[in-house]
Amino acid sequence: MVDDQNPVNQNPGNFRNRPHEQVENIARKGGQSSHHSGFASMDPGKQRSIASKGGHASRGKFEPGSPRAREAGRRGGKAVHHQQEQEQEQGPEE
Image (cartoon, rainbow, N blue to C red; front, top):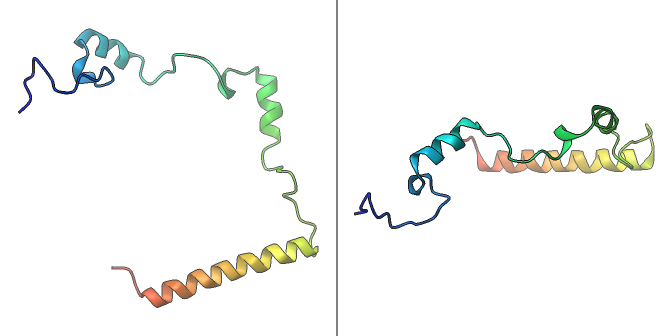
């Protein structure tokens, strides 16, 4: 049994071991970060520039009918077919 006045776990990250006022202050922040970094803190122009590149991964495009496109399609088809065979062997899920 754990005594409420002397908890076994002295970890300061445990809210039970912190003063009530401190826990209230943390809760008021509502998950806000204590620092401003990353994408959200960037200049809007830079954000737009980065966001506009979405979906344009290097070497990610295929020319229709190219050998790379055919090979990728073949591998994808094999993977799906293999997965379907495994599901059939296992039977219906309960």
